[in-house]
Image 1 (spheres, rainbow, N blue to C red):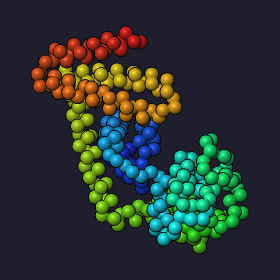
Image 2 (image 1 turned 180 degrees about the vertical axis):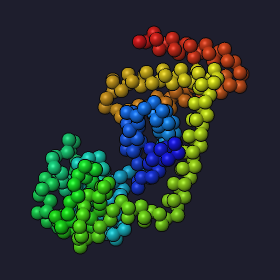
Image 3 (image 1 turned 30 degrees about the vertical axis):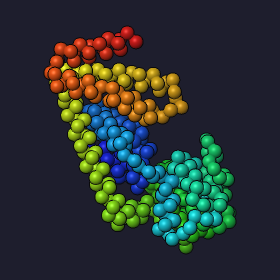
Image 4 (image 1 turned 90 degrees about the vertical axis):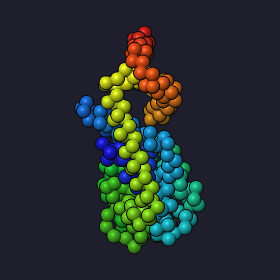
Length: 292
């Protein structure tokens, strides 16, 4: 469970705290059996809590900065980004922010939403004039592209998993493995990942303890009843506001619920008033039936 939480929180990603991995992890468990869903829900909830309390100040676009620094290059001239997905968008936007004079986007078809830069068909890439850097951001299903089919460049940054490029080239080629190896040589970054793993472990243990309480105490039953009410409302919000990411809605409703119910449930534990806790739990269940 600890490893699942670390992956979901982005602690194993080349970009520490990568935002997309949380949603990908959650969706991966949706089709699993009940036992796996229970394990996954604890790990993902703890990962979400860690992300909510931690300031992750990087995104996938910053891999461009790290690649340029490793290659000893300045962000100037032309940047070619292969791909039209979320990572390609972030890398292209970052390229414009840090000083590339021109950004070119290459893909099999134009992106569903415009990306800052000139679009060219992937088949035309070999005919392009020289560029300063090439960033490969093609999806996992893409076939590897021979490096000799790229325009001349000083840097090829391969951000694909599996790799986007194969063969040899005169340009400096940097992969995700290379970026991770470089980070491993930086003690402060490893120390931060270690501290976050320890914090995640604490959050997981707390949630496991809460699950035990849910099945054995009146206060736990109240919290479970309130959580079911939150999930019902979350489902309604998803339908009403499809433009908002479900992860955002989930985090907002969960945070609000915790703020409202933390103090009352602590007082109920102190008083040991099981009957009041059961009455409140029944009230939330009745409200849910009234709304359906």
